[in-house]
Image (cartoon, rainbow, N blue to C red; front, side, top):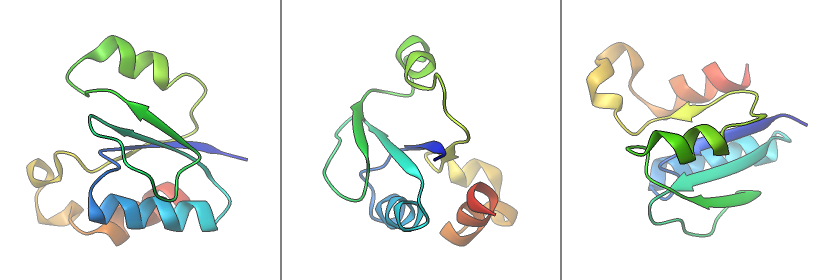
Amino acid sequence: MHSVPVMGSASVIRQAICHELCTRGYHVHGFDIQPIGGSVSKLVKLSITDPQPVCSAMEGMDGIVHRVFKDWLGPAASGPLWTLLNITE
C-alpha cells in the first residue's frame, strides 16, 4: 500500500481528494494546522512553515498532494482533478 500525505487536509477540496485516494487503496496522512476527521488513515497536526516536523512526517511517503499554495502555480495546475491524476495515475 502506498502512503501519501495530503497537505492542508482540512479543506473541503482536500477532504474530497483524501476520500478518493482512500477508496483507491492509498494510506492517506492528513497534514494540517487544524486537523479534522474524514477519510484519512492518520491525522498529523503541523504547519508547513516549520520544515523539521514536515520532513520528519514525510519519512517513508511515496508521493505528496500539496494544494496549499495552488494559486502560485497558475491556471495550468488548478482544480482537484489535476492533483488527483498526478498523484494516483
